[in-house]
Image (spheres, rainbow, N blue to C red):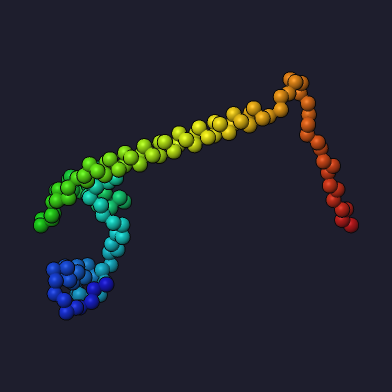
Length: 143
């Protein structure tokens, strides 16, 4: 919401201009009728791909930029450098730890299954019915 302020900064001037242009009602209205995105913009994805907007709006904005180019007075997107190689090493280290943990869990499951199989009683090969049937409960007759 825009409110007049004693601070005269470029950001305050931009907010006032946006409120005057897109505000509801008379010129200089207090609020902008268009909702803004609340997701955070990251210049790079976790995989190292260039992003042009938040994760939800990147595809649509990428298409518009490819079709029309950057707007006048926009800062170029190459101002943000690609993440350093240490990030890639960290992610590789985390991936290796996750793989080792998954292998360890699979080995534990195999050992547990093998121990249960060896502890199970051996059958002579004849099929026997070990289930017992419970008598059915009778309902009271309603009159």
